Structure formats: C-alpha cells, structure tokens
Length: 253
Image (cartoon, rainbow, N blue to C red; front, top):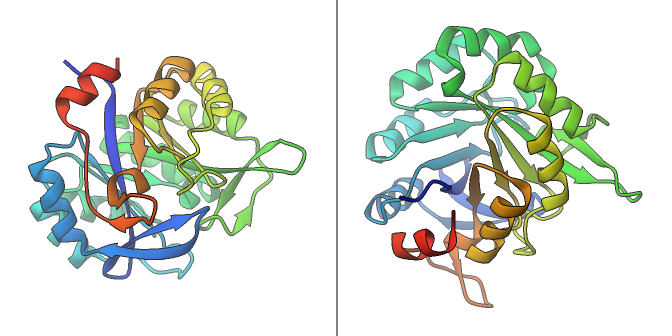
C-alpha cells in the first residue's frame, strides 16, 4: 500500500483556479469545482486548496465557494488563505474542510496557532511556510503571498511551529514554484531532521522521479504539486492529470 501521500495543490483566485511561476504570472487553468470532480475520479489522496489572493487583498475566505468545492470533494480537503480567527476555522470545518493551512497568520500570531491546535486538534492544523533563497544562498521565510520578507530562518521557524502543536508543516519553495526543476531537497532535509511532525514538500515537482528523490533523500511524508497535475507538454496546455495508483506504488515508498 502506498504510504507517501501525493497531493494536488490548487491555487484559487477569486472564482477560478490559476497556476503561478515563482508566485507570479498566474495562468487560468479552470473551474475549481470541475477540477475537484476530475480528481475525485482519479482517486487522489487529498486536495490542497490555497486562495492566493485572500491574504494580499486582506479579505476573508470565500466561504460560499469553499462550501461548493468541499461538497464535491470526496477526499480530504485542506484549505488556506485569508484565515485570521478561530471563528473562521470553525466555519471552514463546518463546511467540510478537514484541515486548515495557516501561513501569514501563523507568523503574525503564534497564539492563533497554539489555540487552533488546542481547540481543533493538531491533526487538523497545517502550518505553511513559503521560502526563498537570498543571493548568498540563505533561505528566508516570506509571507503575504510571497510579498513580504520576514528575514526568518525557515528551519528555526519550523521547529517553533512544531512546538506550538501543528500536525503537519507544508514547505513551499517560491524559487521553484511552477518551474518543474525539482524540490529544494537541501532545505527540506534540514527541516525534516529538525522536527518530529510530517513535512509536505511543495514547489518544483516535474515528475514522479522528483517526488521519489525528495521522499528518499529528504525524508518528507508527503509531496504536493501543481503544474505537474494541470499542464501537459512543452506548450503547457491545460490538462488535469494524476499518476495511476500502479505508477505511484511502483516508484514511491
């Protein structure tokens, strides 16, 4: 039985799905409800839905749309974007969202992280960290959809989040987002070794081999990908796909 979770990462912007490259130049790839229906048929492990406009636009989650998406989603759904309060988390759970991803809010309000884990359980709270390399090669944490540099070290920050009780940590590489150049194995390995909670790798997946490498070399528990599942061919035609269970079982531990 496949142990490594393979998670499509869908980027929501207003009412559509988009895919970015290095968190920029968003390209429309379809309707979120239709995409979820297709992934249902492909029996994916779970879905990660991130609203990339909510936090930068300073608006709350689109609860009506999220409810529509959750109502069509037959697999576990994680949602992130625009979340700033316990009441919002409670409302998302009531809509059928199983896990909540906290990114900017987690950095700006550690109390929200601790209170969320205490109230809803660690297994329902995912901490998300967006990282970017400096010219000198140092990794730093960025928030606000990749617009604000905190100067924080992601390894130290991940350890702090783990102590606060989060059930999982999503590490997303801004530099590799949408590039199909492979995951940032060096950073992921350092973070996985520093915490005792599952790590989800995101940013840079272009093949099952990329996923295999990051699992074996960095020790992550799950892999997420966007472009790999929504584009096809060198011209990046929009085509939602997902490897067969036979392929995943053959190549992933």
